[in-house]
Length: 334
Image 1 (cartoon, rainbow, N blue to C red):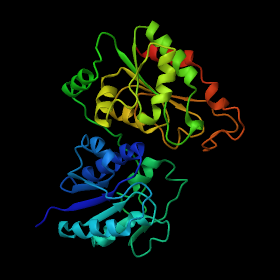
Image 2: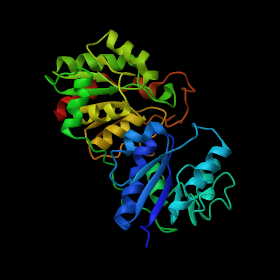
Image 3: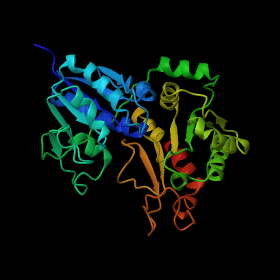
Image 4: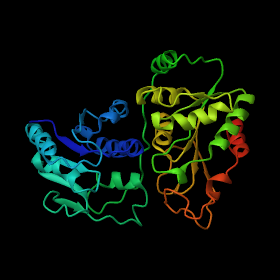
């Protein structure tokens, strides 16, 4: 008899992919014998490689937002011989449901959305009051219909001491002082970004307190990192690391300070204390999934607005979070 297997259509964002591990963990705890494969963007492979629950990551042939019917059909047809028992579709778009349908997976599970009738045959209603967090919504798709997640396992991205040493050596980072990672970027927009002047002031304070300061992010964050490094002793690594190196550097750090971003979720999953800064978004909806989180959230009357830019023009939800407060949190933990 063939080994039972599930095909998951994964999300397109770093933070969501990390949170999806809670679903993978739930599936394996309920059915230890089941194999889990994930259709995922190529950039996410270093993250998935640190998840022992996954048998194989299948690289999606499409770019984010690309419909590409032919590519999806060819991928689905190539997967038919694997005879998956079930597919779980995490994105709520119509196009995300196509690969399992072309693969002829008999049970295709996902939330109602974008007229996916027929393409999904196990359509779940999304009660946003009950499933009030992204991670709960992911986990719920791995449960029986109508079942509500009672306990959500936290993601755990594995990083060994050897992997951490290798990453530091590749970037010529010494281990003379404990390191704190600063993550100033956020894909969603400036209303999620703590002021760069605040990050720089925090970096100066951390240096005086005996910490090395590393700025992590993608190439898009390089200018922000340069701004912080220009007025502080921080080392700007934005755009200089791959995602695999970023995972290992974060695992080495004593703390991370981050906007509500994908790297915030990576930092939480590697097990270090995370100071998570929230502006336009809500720590109730996408919290860092760790017991070691210190949430910085003003909770103003206009928060959370979930806007890319502050509609009132003052950005008080972020500017009023002071560097001295975060420095005190980190020094108190150390």
